[in-house]
Image 1 (cartoon, rainbow, N blue to C red):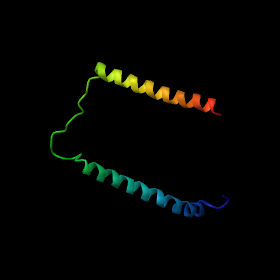
Image 2 (cartoon, rainbow, N blue to C red; image 1 turned 180 degrees about the vertical axis):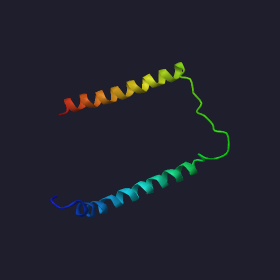
Image 3 (cartoon, rainbow, N blue to C red; image 1 turned 90 degrees about the vertical axis):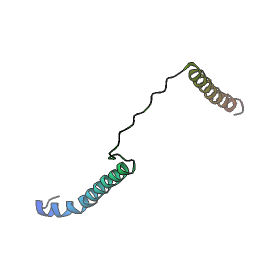
Image 4 (tube, one colour; image 1 turned 135 degrees about the vertical axis):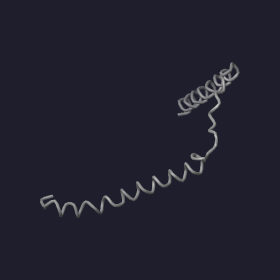
Length: 83
């Protein structure tokens, strides 16, 4: 800490090397991932189809939420009773 700028720079460079190499490796991995998913393919891109939320879906979702709440509540009640 008490030395000049040159000595501090020499101590700082070895700690920056792995950081730069890691950034280059991450960029290369992302490029490979995009290529694997045909990101730059010369074809027409598709889009996500929006599926409407119908009444049956909402009922099933409500039943599942109620089942989870009852399962957790039952577990807590059994834990209190048999403690």
